[in-house]
Amino acid sequence: MATKVRSAIIKRKTTETDISGKLVVDGKGKTDIKTGIGFLDHMLTLFAFHGLFDLTIKAKGDLNVDTHHTNEDVAICLGKAFKEALGACAGIRRYGTKEVPMDQAAAKAVIDIGGRYAFAWRVPPLTGAYQAETSYTVDEGKDFLDTFAKSANINLHVDIYSGGDAHHMLEAAFKALGMALDEATQIDVRRKGVPSTKGTID
Image (tube, rainbow, N blue to C red):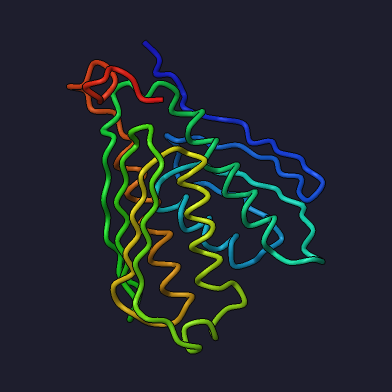
C-alpha cells in the first residue's frame, strides 16, 4: 500500500508580495529558494536540508520599501504549508527538540504540533556586534520564526544560549528548527490515530 505524500502547494499574492512554491514533508532536503533576501534564502536552505524537507519558494516583494513584508509573508506561507501538509496529524510524534552548535553560537528548538500557538524566544543580551555580520538582523529572524509558529499553529520555543555573530546565532536556530520539526512530523508506527487525548489537533 502506497504511503500518502505529505505535501502542500504554496501560493500567496497581496499588494506587497507574490509567493509561490511547494513543500514536501517527507523529502530529501532538496531546495530551490529565491525570496529576494539572500540571507533568508540561506537560512531556509539550511532549515530544509537538515529537516529533509523538499522546499521550493519563489517570492517577489516590495524590497524597495524594506524586507519586512517579504520576510513575514514567506513565514506565513511556510507555516500554512506545514499545517496543510500534515492534515489531521494522524500518527505523528508531535513533539521534537534539537540542539545545534555553530562555532561560538548554539541554539535549541523545542516544538509541539498540538494545535495551539505559542512562541518563546530567549537570547543572550545583544550588542551592536551581534548585528554587524549580516544585514538580516536577529530581530528579523525572531519575527520570521514567530510568524511561522503562528501560521503553523504550533508551540515553538527557541533558545540561543551561547553567543557569536548574528549569522551563526540564526544559523544554529534555523538548523535546530528544521531538525526538531523533522522529528515531530515523523510517523510513529505504534500510533494509530491523532497524538492527543482530545482526539483531534486543530
